[in-house]
Amino acid sequence: MEIYELSKQLKINGFSINTLKKVIDRNNGNRAFNTLDYYCIYIVFNYATIIVEGEEYEIIGPHIVFIGPSKSIVYQKNPEEDNTYVIAFSASFYERSAKDSMFLNSELFYNFNQDVFISPTKATQYDIKRFAIDRLALYEHKDSGLYVSIAHNTIEALLLDGLLNIEEKSLHITRKNLQNIDLVNKFRVLLHTDFKKHKIVKYYADKLNITPRRLTEMTEHVLGKTPKQIITERLLQESIRLLKHSTASIAEISYELDFNDEGNFGTFIKKHLGKTPKEVRTDSKLNGNK
Image 1 (cartoon, rainbow, N blue to C red):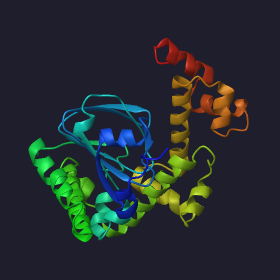
Image 2 (image 1 turned 45 degrees about the vertical axis):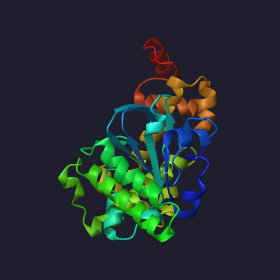
Image 3 (image 1 turned 90 degrees about the horizontal axis):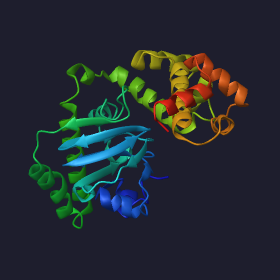
Image 4 (image 1 turned 135 degrees about the horizontal axis):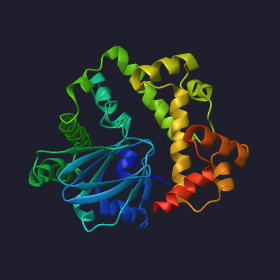
């Protein structure tokens, strides 16, 4: 499912800002989304609970939440949906310089410890509404070029606010490493969409027009892991999620994850978790996680 039924603004400009309530309403009340190719910034003034890639995050504002492309999101119902704002934008909309690329490829959107970066902000609710929301609304129906410039400026200000909360050493990205980080991030995005059908490193290397050896060098440098390890971790993450939180049979899960048969899936789980799929599922039920 898309981030939502794309607004005219997002289709034309590659940028949109809406309240969370409008986003959900446009999605016919469905609270499950995928960010697709878009970068998302959520401005939470009071309270919100979101599930990103199966992990629940409770956010007590004021906070700015950064979520990168190709992420699955579920919004939990709360009374603050009219006071939570969603900014969505494409890379092509924002990237105008090497600095812009560095911001998009930073830990704000590619935080390797978790799938979302939640940043406290020192700005008041009044300041954010006046600068990031009211000002955009003021120019939305005026000169389109001016509106796009203000939108770009607003995104940059929010990114800079978030970057203040990332360790300084994370920001020292050389131009030489920027391409490596960009390709590793593209690999991660590809993996999110293709991991069920494609488990071989060569598939991803071919998609990125590089050799498997080059991809391995880059992921080891940026993430400290080989592509094979990253693929395996993603498969395990999804396997555990399905075993713990779905009612599908083990055979159905094996089929969904494109294993040849239930036996191969069982061997994979046993090798990496030391338990059978049935034991993983039983343990979750004993712990009350259905």
